[in-house]
Amino acid sequence: MTDRRSGILLHPTSLPGPHGSGDFGPAAYHYVDWLVAAGQRAWQVLPLTPIGPGNSPYASVSAFAGSPLLVALEPLIEKGWIAAADVATGSSLPTERVAFEQVVPWRMARLHEACSGFERLGSRADRAAFAAFCTAEADWLEDYALFMALDGHHRQQQVWCWTAWDAGCARRDPTALAAARVQWRVEIGFWCFVQWCFFAQWHALKRYANQRDVQLIGDLPIFVAHHSADCWARPDLFLLDAQGEPRVVAGVPPDYFSATGQRWGNPLYDWPAMQRDGYAWWVARMRHELARADVVRIDHFRGFVAYWEIPAACATAVEGRWVSAPGVALFEALRAALGPLPVIAEDLGVITPEVEALRDGCGFPGMKILQFAFGGDAAHAFLPHNYSTHCAAYTGTHDNDTARGWHQGAPDHERCHAEAYLGTDGADIHWAMIRATCASVAELAVYPMQDVLGLGSLHRLNTPGQLDCWTWRFAWEQVGAAPAQRLAQLSAAFGRTAARDGPCSAMRGYEVT
Image 1 (cartoon, rainbow, N blue to C red):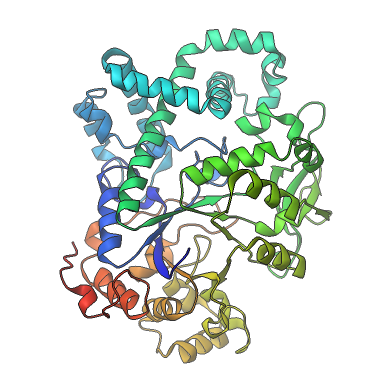
Image 2: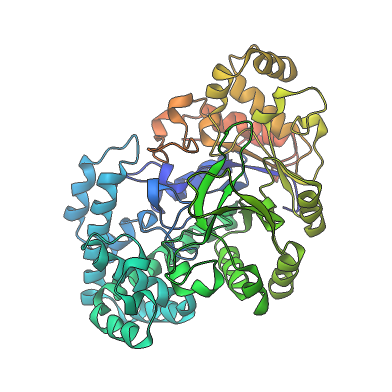
């Protein structure tokens, strides 16, 4: 973030498209074109990793793999690896939301067909590219593909966690793993094929965006899931017992919002073990993330200073305790291995001076959320007149209600404060919040797509702690020309576009559809 720019927060699954879920297909490229027409120079996504329990991208089976749901089917049809008639069966899938219970099995069936088609019809160049990918990504890909093959086998036997697998594979006995690689060779090849498709398509989309001066902002969760290839492959890096089960788990302590805190359940890192090899796992993870994004938002940044450790036997977070994390030592190791780190620190919640010192010492911008600004007085740090330049400002995040939904449900004093501060009667609250965020001195301004479209609470993407989230999608019919025109004018007026001739000239030549 070397200059002022603004962008949109939208996970690719929320894109329009004919196959039950947004993906890296034609709609993604059209969306980049829409961003350019709207004067937006950043596209922020959520983690691109496979979804986990509750369909959340924050509880993935891998910190490195890409989500099969995001693989576009059109390129596979063009290659002749999958029949257009088979893909057409997806026309019955809902379009207004992601019906995961229908979409996941349907898409996985299509990807299996595509893999078979590749094996029969793949060109010499395609096969060479696939082999090169498998070699380049072997450090994580081999364990991931084997993990997924074994997981699929054990799920048929109603076994849901790797610690309950056959002992040889669960404990990674070399003889058992060698036999498994032979037995599950076809499935291993399939999972490698899907990852090749994912990364080839994502990097092509990223190049398209970058060529148009649109940065891709990724998202890196601090913790990984227990049932994951990462935890299975490197149990020595986590605080596990002799059976591989977590001894302690992650969460946050009781606070104003929850008398029992939040028990997330992720296994915690064995930081001394990670330190002994120079934090090699974290170096590999950050290198991988920076290869698929221009900027990376690190979730729960305060956990690198101290994290809430909960005994695994406890049902709530009440009996947890704060435990120190490596802090600056980790980021010094990352910088030494990777150079400057284009990172946004998610520094929300109760933040201590130590967390601020780590963020500022690393030179990372923090986050300012406008929805959170109106519960206090004029000194509140999230009010735009109090921002510093080196920050990323948001009207709201993926965990927030939409701007309109928040305004409708806010306490009277917050709603009145917001209307007075933003100069609105509330009818156009979403545009008033976008304007204030855009006008601020923050280097980066980001608006959820729902706010740009002025949508209410029914279109919220996620409500922490609730099920049946992550399903929201939009349709191009909802958009029209007006939002892009208004965004382009605001971005030009407040110096967030490449054009410097003002808001009127910024719209010349734009044709937004």
